[in-house]
Image (tube, rainbow, N blue to C red; front, side, top):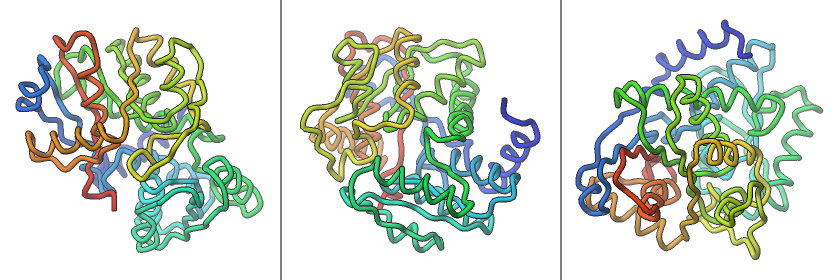
Length: 314
């Protein structure tokens, strides 16, 4: 259970920092171009750092402050790090972002501009996650990593996306398409709808991601992607080490949804089409949430795709 006091503070600070309440728009040109009956975009790029991750960063920062901790830490390829750094600066807190050496991390300078410290870790995402968690214990920092001891808070923060979609649409959508990285976003959106007794079908879209790969293969478990390749395009999505994979699996399975793997070239094509048809500069990794809809057997439904702005990515 999330303490009521924390929920109230979270909602107040969301308003004060202009996090959440992101725009919701119908994409009629994309509907015609892609043969989709009705498509709405939930524009998470409206958040201050340009991604949905501001929501999770804020609730973790408030929980840390409530418990007397003054420094946040987490692993990131860039987006979550930028969100934590932004929130920490606004709340006058310290921030340590751990970045694995195998990632390009194009938002490094932005993270540092917000006053956070970047810690480079030799190795992969898992190694950086473990280093961040270990140093949190050693130094008395707040572990804000997805999948960590405070994972329920990150999931809770994303339930507000579902609430905002339902309020904007005035009804449950038939499908909600979400880009999948660690799985926390998918889990939060799904739990948000379930809390309102709504059950849209969930579409998880990714590239080189073990949870989505397992679902595509018809498994009810994550399956490692063979010869996994992390690129600057799929960096926010890819990985065989995920922190909340069970959230993706349960959302797709319980909603009778679907999963789609979209390669880099199609992610880039999707971003180009969205820019041409709707004038929106969307991060390719997030543009896959639109492209994945075109892989479904039927597009004769009301779809909502969660997208992130490219302009804030670096």
